[in-house]
Structure formats: structure tokens, C-alpha cells
Amino acid sequence: MKRILLCLLLFTAIACSTNRDKPISENSPGPITLVIHGGAGTIKRENMTPEREAAYHAALQQALDSGYTVLEKGGKSLDAVIAAIKVMEDSPLFNAGKGAVFNSEGKNELDASIMDGSNLMAGAVAGVTTIKNPITAAYAVMTKSEHVMMIGDGAEKFAREQNLEIVDPSYFFDSLRYKQWIKAKQAEKDRTAAWIDPYTKDKKFGTVGAVALDQFGNIAAGTSTGGMTNKKYGRVGDAPIIGAGTYADNTSCGVSATGWGEYFIRLAVAHDISSLKKYAGLTLQEAADSVVMKKVPSLGGDGGIIALDRQGNVSMTFNTEGMYRGYIKKRGEGKTFIYKD
Ligand code: ASP
Image (cartoon, rainbow, N blue to C red; front, top):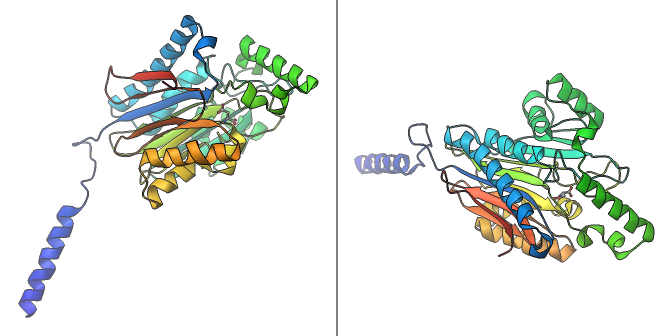
């Protein structure tokens, strides 16, 4: 009897050990994927010139290429996210870094965050006005401080100490964004419908974000923005809030959001998608649909998300007319999109 029991125990032990997930090692690299967004909103074909459309596709491709190159060389998902976001922060086409929207005082106040899905480490900055690439400051907060979020002057002082690139606030100026702000100001004065509902009438969101999966099976997500046109001084949106605009967890997925930030904060959108996948057993797409297509609009908000899981499943889900977006899984096969169809 004892012998039979021993045999049974041995058999179970062997069965268990062979059932274990194979660790993703450098000898057997896993799939790599990068997904990005450049903001959601009322992006209509009739308002777009062919030149502008081509410029958006080119900028998105450049961001994909930059991030993918990191992944392809065996780099980390965090570095891929930073590389992709920096391209979009440097482009005036997007509402992040150069070309950020103006707040009600005519200033550019920037927010950004990043999260490492392998250990749930995160970093964020909010309301910064002189850091050229806020995503690098978010990363520095995560890796070089004991904090998760730093704001305003303190974040800028820290960025200087970390030798990040500092610019004069005028660097962020873009004439198109300035005109948008003047229009929003006028609407506010006139108390028109566009003021009462400023963001749904002139939805020129343009926040940027990236989610990457590296060959080690690690997911990272990041988001960077100038916020919303004519926002009140000191207003902070969802982009730098971990769980709202950004979340990453290897055991679930990575998410970066864009849209009407107040709603995304109240619904903890990025974390909710991750939780629905992790605890309720929904697929990535079901989780994204449940939050972006049902919960956000039911409160009156709008916007979109990009998400990615460890199997390389991608979701680019939005309830607006368009979202600048793209993904890449293989060299030369990067795809970029603007409209719903
Ligand atoms: N979510 C951003 C914010 O509320 C805006 C955007 O996505 O464009 O600050």
C-alpha cells in the first residue's frame, strides 16, 4: 500500500513539473508587439486634407518603427514605449510635448506616466512646463525616486537633477493649437454650446500612448499629453493617473487611454480593463468593449484605449469618430489607422 502511495506521489510531482509554463528565456524569445495611439476625437475625413492625413500616417509609422526597433534588438518593453512616445511628443501633430494644447492661462501644462507590467512599478509627472519629453521624466520618477508621481516645480527640479532635457516653455508652442485655444476662449466668453460642452464640440484630443510586449514576456504602457484645450490651470487629467490613463500588469494586460480625462479617472478605465480580464475572465477585447463602449459613454464621456496582452492580442477600441493608432508585430508590417472604418 505504501509503495502504491509513493508511486502516486512521484507521478503527480512529475506531471506537475512538466505542466508548468515554460519560462520565456533569451534562448526561446517570445513574440514582440507594439501598439500606439495619437489621440481619439472627432477626426472626420471631410476635415482632413490628403497632406495632413499622410503626415499623421507617417508620424505614426515613425513612432512604430522607433519602438519596434528597440523590441527587435531584444530591448525592453519600457524602452520601446519611451522610444515610440518620444517620437510623438516631438511631433507638433499630437497633443503631447511640442504641439500640446493651451490651458485657460495660455500655457502648456504637460502630464505623463509609465508602468512596468513585470513588477507593477510606475512613474508619473503632472503639470510640467519645461521638460521636453515628459515621458522620460515619468520614467525617471519610477526608476530614480521612491515615488510614483511628482508635479509642477518639484517634478521639474527633479528632471533637472536627472539631467533630462529642459526647454523654454515657448518650445511647446504650435500656432494651430493656439488658434484652437483662442476659439475655445471666445466660446467661453460667449457662453455658447461649445463652451458648455467644450470637449465634445471641438474634440481635438491628441494625447499619445504606447503599450509594448517584449521578447521576455514583459508588458509596459505609457501615456503623455497636454491635457484638454482651455483646461483650468492646475487641472490634471487621466493620462498621469496610474489606473486611469495607464496600467500594465504582465498577468493581465497593458492599457493606455485617450479621451475626456475626468470620466476616465472616475471609472479607473485602464485598471478596470485589466481587472475585467484578470478576475472576470473576459478576453482583452471584451474587457475593452465593456469599459470603452458601455461604461464611459453611459456616464457621458468619450474616448478610446489601446491594450495588449502577453499573448500579443491587441485592442484599439474607441467610441469617437476616429483615433490615430497603429500596431506592429513583424518588421515591415506596421499598420496605421485614423478613422473608424
Ligand atoms: N485624456 C486627456 C486628458 O483628459 C486628453 C486626451 O486624451 O486627449 O487630459
